[in-house]
Image 1 (spheres, rainbow, N blue to C red):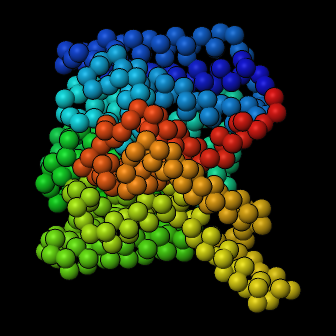
Image 2 (image 1 turned 60 degrees about the horizontal axis):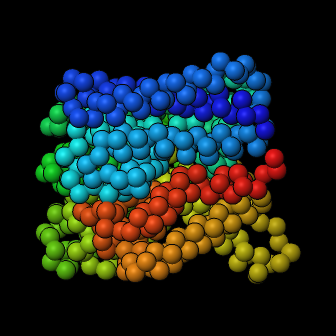
Image 3 (image 1 turned 135 degrees about the vertical axis):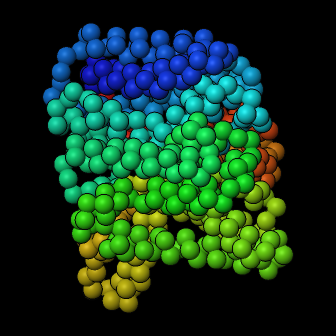
Length: 477
């Protein structure tokens, strides 16, 4: 592998982070905050180490698969290391492990936190915290690809490494056009939501931060009680709509806006995804109403927000779901595993894979009945290859195996089963809150440091969708 090529691209990654660090630095300067020096130091580190590789590396026409994998995985790890520095140097509730955990949670858009008092953070760190969501939401490598001065072959290699095969299925464009569509939809949704939240009663600062977290399906809030703080139905409705949109394939959103036949309304997968989400909301609302938790309108309101929030891996909260009936918790856990669609900012197993898994099971049943038959699986009028079907089935197995092993490791630290199980799923799925001690109104601060470190690795595994990490350690040098 050509290290000079890898370092050059990682340098661009650092410079991109430096741009957002500079904005946070300006906020700290204007408000004379204690985070000024930590942010200044981190910004300088990003600029120096970002520019340094440019001096010794020229233009390279292509990247090998091994170089692409190394860039993607290393890019995420280095970004998370940089992201923790402002927290660590500022102090407060942050020690080394907690700063790392918060940074990984931000960039992977998990939204889990170790903070007991979020509102104690300076505005600049609150912005930086939300910015890590927005940088990581569509993927920092995607942003870098837009400005990367490499040839087309290098761009294709990195895009194929960053995005799964299913994610690319609704993009019918060249690599650069696909990247531009992702960014346009991402930025457009962010701007529109920010404006609507301002009109609904939020100030500009809270509006921007919550729009960053919503569109990235992250869930970091500027308030200790998350969205419940605002006690505003219109704020909740706006956030629900944009969480739902952010969980839909961005290629289909773009197709809907431009009048393409590849759009939300023609997609069977989108219809199935929305129907399953709607069914989950009704089941949770009915159980809450029957058990006299709330009135019917309140049950529907809280159920809608929590199911959509978890089902899109955003993780915002309006109530404490830890006190809800076990049935509603099981429904929510299902959505924690399933999550939203490929090609969105959502984490988790992804609904498309669940959809394909069900179709594959049906195919196997047909083969049992008719061993000599030939059956093909179709999604969005496209025939799924046997290799993609096998890859998806293997991913499902690896995914389940990973959160089982994580749960097992956590229970060796005397963490109760509910907390261990839900924390494992919530971090691997980049969802954020779980149940037990890590519920929607709780945090991860009470867990042992080793547990936090394991869960932070879980977040990275989930964001990189496991295969990339496995590939990194199995490629031949």
